[in-house]
Amino acid sequence: MPGQRSITEAEKLVQAKLGGIPIQHDQMAVVANIHRAASAVRQHFENSVLRGSDLTWTAFVVLWVIWIWGESETRHVAEEAGISKGTLTGVSRTLQSRGLVRRADHPTDGRLVLLSLTEEGEALMRRLFPEFNAEEAFVAAPLSTEECRSTADALRRIVVQVETHGEERRLSLLDGAEPAPRRSGRRAKP
Image (cartoon, rainbow, N blue to C red; front, side, top):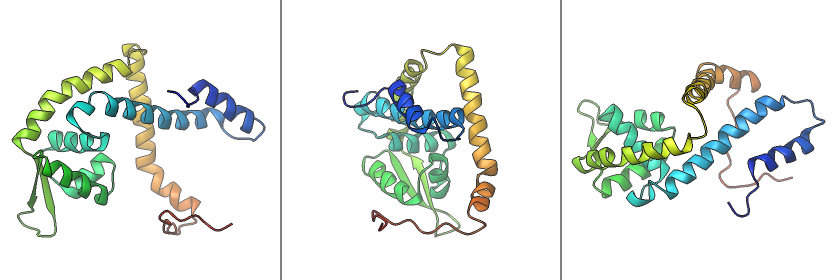
């Protein structure tokens, strides 16, 4: 993309800047490239297959979660989609206004909301997912079938590491304290 450095250029700049600092470069490269790959893939999908359906990546993931899991509580959809409940509220309202998602009160707990796909949402996902999967194949084309399996397995192990031990690690890094609240949009004073 114009104005952006290639991944190779970025890695050389990082090595030049951090080469003398005793850090774990290979592990840093894994995490940096996970982020970079996720951003590149997301942008590619939003600018290609999702554009025709006027969907963002997040909206597609919400539709996918509901399509696969069926009617679900909003908290579960947010968790599976990897977004906050506040973000889900906005996304689900947009999808509802487009006739793709239905919101309903939980039958036994009035505090909870259930999300499900409408017939139009189901039809969209049945039509869209094969196109989405064709782009998944395009993105993974440089890898052999075995490399795809190996990469997917390695990424699963990373997810399990964070899901299993992340909270314990966070507590040890913060000496058991809760993290300070985030400052929304404000910069810390020097």
